[in-house]
Amino acid sequence: MAIDLMGLFGSASIGVYSLATEKMAIVPPQMSKVKAERLEECLKVEVIRTTIGESVLVGALASGNSRGVVLPHYVTEKEVDTIKSAAPDINIAIMETRRTAYGNMVLANDKGAIADRRVKEKDLSSISDALGVEVVLGEIAGLPYVGSLATATNKGVLVHPLLKEEEQRLLNEVLKVRLDVGTVNCGIPYVGMGLIANSRGAAAGFVTTGPELFIIGQALDVAKEI
Image (cartoon, rainbow, N blue to C red; front, side, top):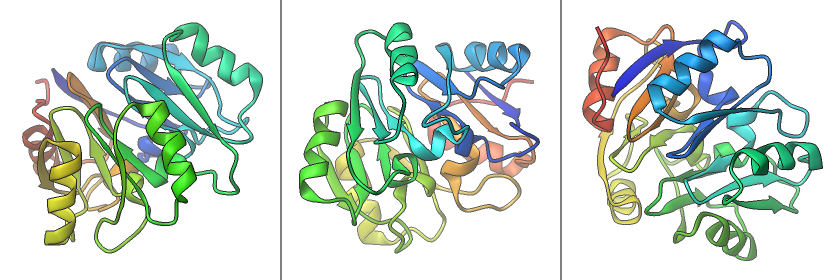
């Protein structure tokens, strides 16, 4: 188990560009072979290289867990085939809505999911069917875009420091894991934008500090390799 430090496209916001679950990591095709191998070693999963809707903003546009992936309506057939070829058992929900940033709108692990309060009831059902978990509406720090405000695994959740007490209760109830608050990338509270993880490891933005790494390790039960 480890925490790796890395960037993509010169940015420390690796969660904007990549998605990690217990079974796979989806990254843009432009990620170097060396970084992809590092990510595979860190998370102990296969790395799938693809855009989403011909965009490199994979982590902002897609959300998922080990059972399924939620994608925006303009994902291409080729991109879906790429994911299916690497993970044939995965459920794929293509959301036919005007909203597209499902990575920012859904926070999920294999036990439950929290969705942006603006997601409609019928769309919650599609997300729930794909991920195979209960999905409930919620906020973090009084903000709706829950996927960008936290990173969740089957061991823990790291959340925006201004998390409210009632929000914490909901996260604990739905995701069913321990929870800590913290930041990434030298004080950025939008945790999901700078941290991807599963139960075996994590990758954080390259400017994440030592104290932040300690909190990440405690929250997600992973450790920085020396």
